[in-house]
Amino acid sequence: MHIRKKPRYVWVVHAGWFVMIGALDEYENRKDKSPPFQPVLYSKTQNYAAKVLQWHPVAVKKDVLFYQFQASADEDACTIELLPDACINILFECCPDDPGVILSGLQTRAQEIQLKPGVRYFGFKPYSEGGLSFKELDLTELVGDSVDLLELLPDAERLLQQLACTDDLNEQIRLFGEFARSCLIDHDYQPNFVDFFAMLLCTQRGSADLTEIQKMTGYSMRYCRERFKGKIGISPKQYNNIMRFQSTLKQLMNTEEPHMSLTALAANNGYFDQAHFIHDFKRFTDMSPGQFRNKNLKPGMLSGTEEET
Image (cartoon, rainbow, N blue to C red; front, side, top):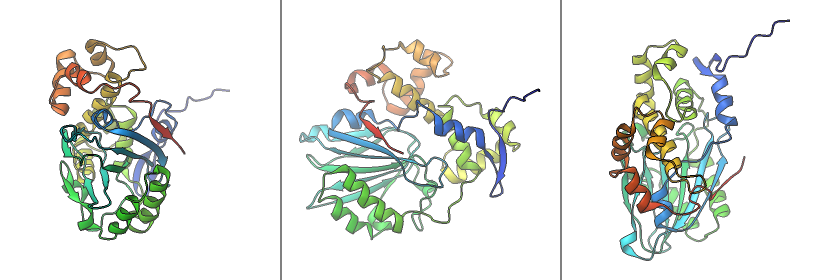
């Protein structure tokens, strides 16, 4: 009996869109799947702790990173840069006397934020904005920008006060979950073509051939690009480049594996040469890979996140 080899990706119609069943299985079963990486945040703050949970049952990328940390008591160390990771971010300032909460859109360059010395923070970073609702706000308008979440969701005031009263990460996650179920989750959400497109780019860690994806979908590249940017806020190429940057960043800062040369890093992540890699890295961080590593390297920075399903 002749058995046909199962194709890597199978496209089926779902809610009026073609979706990639094989790619979804590959994404969910990846053993090397790791959360968005923010080495400056890890190296400049104290008591960093994080958990990855599957929090949205319908979203294609249903994982979320919950994290907490305490800002340094040294005011000079409280200016930090958040690097592009293709995620939105909600950061709660758990200061009992003057709490605050900022929603940051997807970033294409390093975003500088000012922390308050000694204050605790709690963060929510979903791997995808799919399934979230911020009322009148279109998240594509927030690319490269931030907004006070209380202006959008005044009900978050009570949550902010509750978060400021506990430093237990599990309790903070529980409190946020209760708030999200009533105020943040879009209960009518259904995944579409763009969600699966973004998931495939994530699975390929920045090495995806956009021309091949266009052939797989049957849509033109122009149509793919317009649909993608209309929902995510940036082009597939920009998203792909951020995925590659994140993949390279994790390898550059990994203290548990033998240090790779810049030439090896470039080749391992699909850059044309070392010069191309350095130029791309500087575009996201404003410094060379070597300078960045020397400034921010801290032991164990890739091993401090618990994963639960």
